[in-house]
Image (cartoon, rainbow, N blue to C red; front, side, top):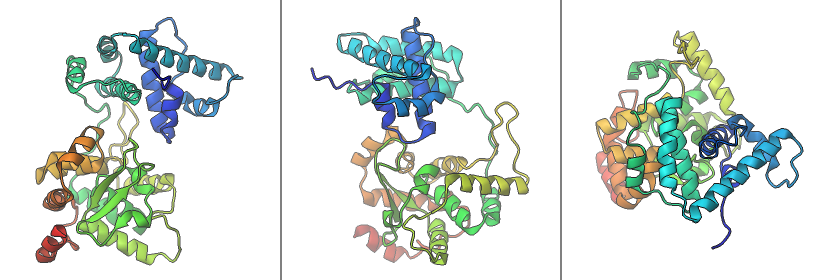
Length: 348
């Protein structure tokens, strides 16, 4: 059998953001600590930058690098044992039960899901029914931080008080289900303004799961985005040529000024944060259209491959248009109002 096993270093190198890398490293390292309890000094997720720098170095110079090298060796060792017949499904069930006692429901479930992604990255399949058995005793996932209840009026108030370019970002997030990081990487050539609904093509390098996908944009988001792009005098190909932390700064400044800056006393996380735009899309879409299609458009990994095989672009467009009024925060759809023209474009 080819020596094509991919340890923690190569797996993490596939992800290009520090936050994702930290989470994935933490999940796999904590999993391996339960498998091999004799190793009790495996570095946690905050060593992600060090692991990236140490990849390819045969002689790590620091104690942190040596620990990371140990973690990588352990991951390869575990994969080899699986290929020799180790019952990894029993391992997953056992460690999941340990994680249930150690972590919050969301964290324990996510850690095991990440380990499964890593195993599948190495060609080790975990079937749907295997996953059902592994998670059988897991409590229902729930957020550990409280969040503010959001209505259209609240979103309108926030958007109306943001500077124009940041308002355009928020409306694009609310009206598409994109992650903030995906939206901030967009180039003008990724957007097809000639289609109805307007389509956005997210490249593999943009998405969290490294799977390219298509999403759609609500009429109100299209209107605001065009207004913002028309106001620019630069030739920058980026749709939003500013850093995510700049957006975050103006978001915090705006919600604090409106009196919505309260934080969860236990976690310190704000009760109203940008990621809730995605939650808005995912919760509103199924009120009027197919939940599966909404999840697929938002890029939830479990829905991507199957949904893309089942649904035509024509059907996805029709479902999106059904849901448009529910995901929109203003009581108008200024782009998609001509139903006769709409039918012609969908058929085309």
